[in-house]
Length: 543
Image (cartoon, rainbow, N blue to C red; front, side, top):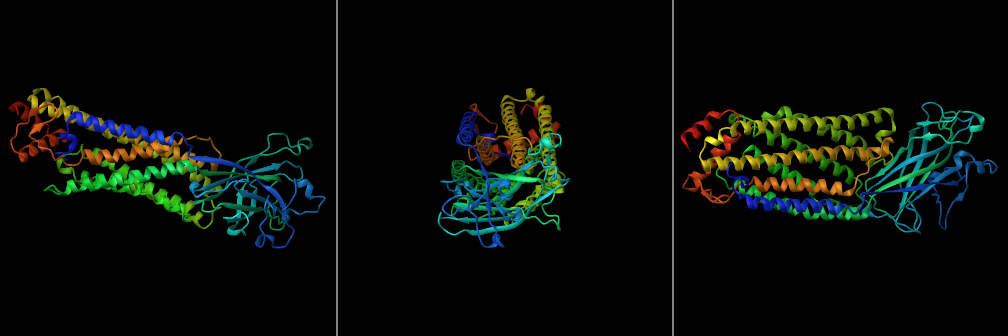
């Protein structure tokens, strides 16, 4: 990387570039700070009555409106009217009255809460499972016919506790039940949605037996804010050409050199490609098309970028630690990069096990079974631990680099003034860039863990983590600015090496080729771990 802009640009210009990037980083946090990323809406189901045979295949029951269903207030009202449990339909209209859904909401995630009353003759048995017959329909006009979108048998295990003594005087009190994952759709292409939920009872097959007396079904719908979606799309639209242009400019400068690209130059270019891939605003098409696979596609893009970014940091530090004969070989990093590739593949498999299946069954969730819940929880915990260990390992690598540089700094006072000043400038700039790299890595680890917990807390009923949209836009902006800075600073410099613009001193060379060779020697000496005698010899000769 000899002759790069980071080595040859004046300190004043570097400070200006750094100040501009800092301003854009602040803007990235500010643009998302005014709008929350998601909105949660509560829905209370309406108990409709439909006593016709095979009713769930031929009729949709509306909770309100001109064609609203025949309703009952509570289950006790069904007894004198001789209404059976199989004839009761819990109906939920999405959204609430006088409102419409929008493609800008991007996705819909629903969790379910059952209100179950305690009865001595109808208690919740151990490992009870509620089986729901769920139908989902949509329409885009308030007076149009409903079109079926999905119809599935949805089993969910109940996890309820009753805190009061199970005595007759406590009958009617409610169990405390965990929320249940219910449905997730990767697009919001229609204005109105309708859910019809039935709880069919079959005592012979033990279906919905021993689940207590279900009084009501409540849903909480979570979707992305339309305002945040517009901010997110605007950022992607602006950053895509910015990263693409700097990437093309960077690689053009690399290919103009007489030598072939080295490993570090290649991985920086690969990082730019992965950043461009995640930046491409294909989400704009979700406004006009019903692409339910957009959530899965977004996860795949983000996973590829994570893998490339983590691998780059290992190679970036390693290239400044290894001896000269070990550099520029990707095979030398297989022990570090290999686990990253395996972890990324496991992340892909885990995502396919849930969101891949949800492409055909929006009611599927890996969190619905004990094994699935344990696997999902184990994945989040192990992934968080592995990322923390990775960050500690990266800190250790940076410490080794700094230690190697410090060992060479002891030789600087014996050098000539020109050579000493150049070394000191390179050391300061590289150390500062390494500290920025560590800060970026720390924020990336925090972002991954928090995003996983935020996504999962609705599903396993744990502690809620509130994340402002400024965190998402800020981290996303940080990645882009970091990649932009790397490609700019590590691009070959076009300036004449014969003059040091930062201090006005002449380097001890005459032609451009000689100066390039001189800077190359400085760089190799600075980051070589075994050639200490070469620096000392040069210092003794007064170069």
